[in-house]
Length: 306
Image 1 (tube, rainbow, N blue to C red):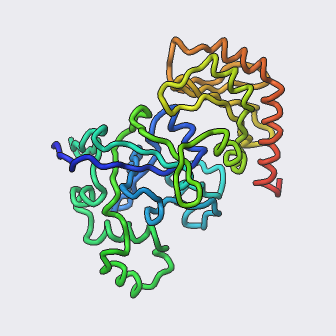
Image 2: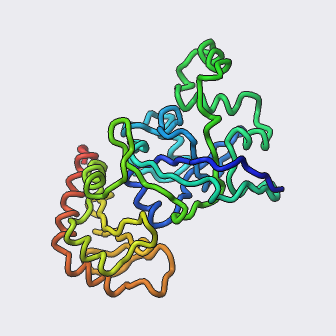
Image 3: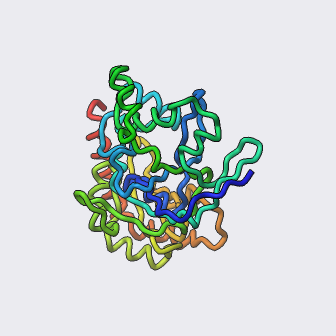
């Protein structure tokens, strides 16, 4: 079954600085969709036509997850490294709706772009379910009264689910038309040095200095306009292997800082300059060790009990 979507609209996807690193070197794909009967669909990308995240359910700050939020995070992600949510209002990615394939449905499997409200109609969701999800983006349904909920349910302006779109399946990084960073109440073109370094350090991710990045850029080239060639370090455990995550050339490479051995290459690529990247690690080991120590300090900042 093939469904024709409406004419061109500008779609926005909001995310954190940390998550944007992977998106720009890979694709948009890590979202999920809760179903009315309690099921879950993975690899769903959420979009909105609203240029700002307020009212969309996007976390607007880093905060500690409550018990129910943490349980849901475990259900969706499996292992959860932190009980803190990310500020997903920081980065705004734009995609033209015309660049995405309209929804197709085969054997009850969705693929492509569809509005959230239309999707709810296609699956015969319970009456007012779409509206309730829209309300939940603005209010905690566990604490508001039944009277308040009914009042919101009957108010056409109490939620924004009419602006939401779902894309079933990954969205290639090449389809991203802009990457912007939020400053106060506006978005400006994102710059790693101006916006990213400090924000990444806030969540324990250390980015190597500009000189080391310039050396890396001689080896790896951006695969598209918005990919950022860079290298970061995160400490998940003080006794864990010291690993640098290197992004560029449309790929993600993990290298052991001490042994200089490649541990993983996200996408198979015979042309990937593995030897040159390993040499870069060896030549920049002092800078990488400096970043590890900062990441380790951040670990203890987030886990003071250890």
